Length: 152
Ligand SMILES: [Zn+2]
Ligand SMILES: [Zn+2]
Image (cartoon, rainbow, N blue to C red; front, side):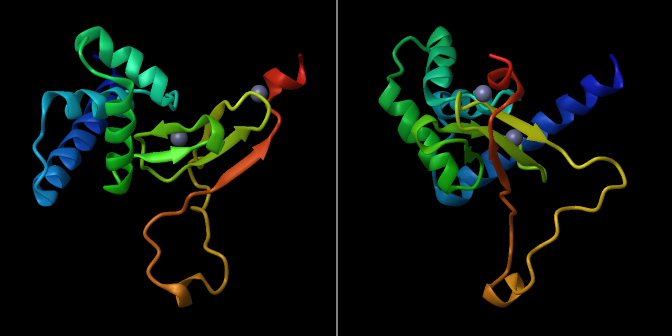
C-alpha cells in the first residue's frame, strides 16, 4: 500500500471517529443512514451536492429520501462535521476540515480546493479578529470564473 493511500485511510478514520464522538455528545444515534450520508461526503474530495450524496447513498439504501439527505447534511453542518461551500443556489458539502480555501466558479458552481503549500504560512486572520471572539475556523472563499468556463 502506498503512503498516500495510507494517509487517506488515516484521515478518513479520523473523520469517522470525530463523527461518532460528536453524535454521542449530542445524544444522536449513529444510524446506518446517518453514517452512510456522512461517509459519502467525508470520502469525497469533490464537494458533492445534496443530490449527488442522495444518488450515492440510494445505491446502498434504496429507501432513503432526498429530504432526509438534506436534513441530515444540515444537521452534520450544525455539528461542525461538514462545511457548506459554493454558491447558495448550488450548495456543496465538504468533509475535509483541514485548513484550505475554496475557489468557487460563479458560472458553473464548481468548487476547487486550494491547500497551503509546504512552508507557506497558514491563512492569517484580519487585524482585529481576535477582539470579536475565539476563532475556530477560517472559511476563505474565492469567487471567479474557473479555467474550464473561461475556455468555453
Ligand atoms: Zn466554471
Ligand atoms: Zn474543500
